[in-house]
Length: 103
Image 1: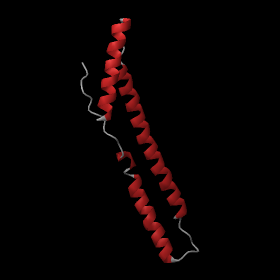
Image 2 (image 1 turned 180 degrees about the vertical axis):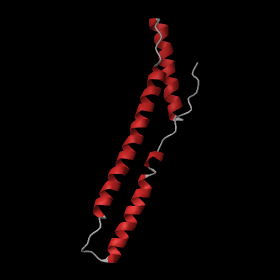
Image 3 (image 1 turned 60 degrees about the vertical axis):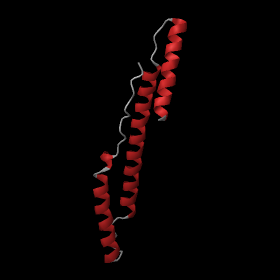
Image 4 (image 1 turned 30 degrees about the horizontal axis):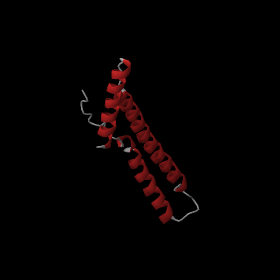
């Protein structure tokens, strides 16, 4: 997996730095925290995108007293489907990665 390769190289760089400078650094931990933050941002962006699209659809499918009964029935069906979809947006997630021990 790419993430494991990146973490391995960062661990190797951390060891080389310690050998040269005598100081401990944990670049893999920095990467892990960065990656989790980016992953969480991607999930939030996806959820926001879907919520925005739902609101736009709701606006387009508004009950119209001048429209036909068939159109208004469809609009109500779309509203019902959007409400159902909206109730599942928080189920969008990305699993945390299983991280190998680099010691």
